[in-house]
Length: 594
Image (tube, rainbow, N blue to C red; front, side, top):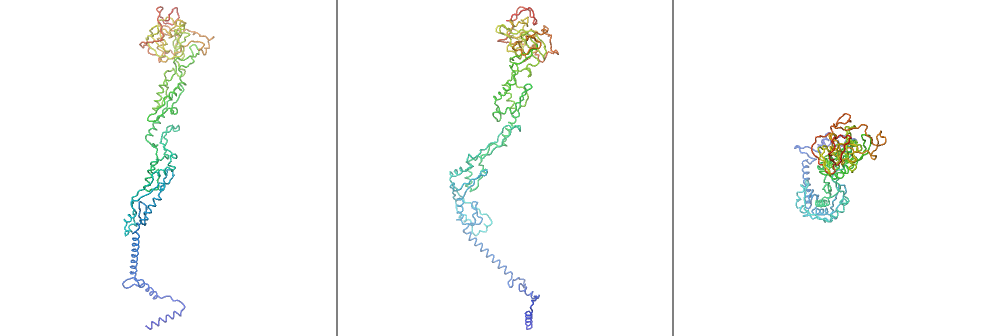
């Protein structure tokens, strides 16, 4: 023991004496570590002289005390406060006293306002003060607090605690109406009414009709706005977008409307109608650009202005009709004369064509045709054409002309000029023809085998009571106006003529002659160098080049029946004297005209 103390003292002395610091020995390091922590034989960990197990226990107890203090403190707080995450009528009222919640509820309505938006982005605000708004709750927040147990506050932290208190909102409806009336976009003068989709005018570029889309406009249903604002206020909503709540008056017919599209197809069907009228080489096209203005009403069926159609066709008739016009005509002897048309030429039947054209338009007809005529010429070139009957009443000769050639010719007797029964000159069309007719006048009744009227009751017929034809008989002993013919020639003529066959009757007088033939010396009428007489055999000295009888113009010569003609119908009583030669050749026989 003494030795150890001496050793330690000696070592301490050595340390003091030595200026250098010695490195700790391994033994000293172990001793220092042992001072920090040592492991007992039983394995317990200690800090210094305190075991770790004791320290852990102390911490647990401390934490428990702290949590208990927090819980009790919060429980004490929630004893007179509402839970966290408390919502009343959808509005958060967490961690406030019932009194504070009631105050906030009142303040909420006192500061309430609603913003109304138009679909164009305009807005207006209506405040609670403007409309005298107030709110009465059926119960206070204290009733909600009574439902919340302060000791169970931790459960409220992690969930939403929602409550609803019934309330009644009241406001002055008149003041609300006045406030709405002050909003500019709710004033009618600032609104644009909606427009339905409709079928627009004809688009010439597209060649059809097209639908014009609807216009929604900005017209607002004032009553609906009032109802929607009232409902929003009662729900405590603060924003109202009028378009989202259907407050705008919408067009009733949209561009995809099925009935509208069917009507469009109907319109375009009418648009397709096109009638091309042919007037000889000339044409007039009646398409939609012409008749669009005639359509007065569209719908399941269209209504066309009949008067407008008649006026249009009358204009065409004035332009292309040749009926009753005067025209130049070249006689067999080369005279160019100007004659009136007596009920001959092209005359459009405006009334009938109006009805037909309207039906064509309604049915969408596409056609190329002539209009309907009440009277027709032979051709559109000169009305007369290549086949016609020429009556030179100055020469008292009848010619059947085909393509400029004389097929047959004969003497005749025309109306008595002495008693005013002159046969009128002009260009006519054959009205009809018939066999075995009885002609009746004021003072006569005559039977004829061939009756071919062309100018009212004036016509060709056989005159079996005459023995002489031609010459100047017509001056004093002519007919009552008809053209008397030898029976044999009348039979031939009957076979040639047809309905509307052109018949040209003229007197070669200075007032009608436009141009004389080149071989005429003094402008007087000249007899043909060769006499072209018709004999009893029905043969003519002059026929057409190919000798044809133009069978396409011949009607059945055996047509039976009688025609009772009354009024001014001309007929000749057969004389009891003279022989019935019907040759038209001059002789010494005389006839007495009745």
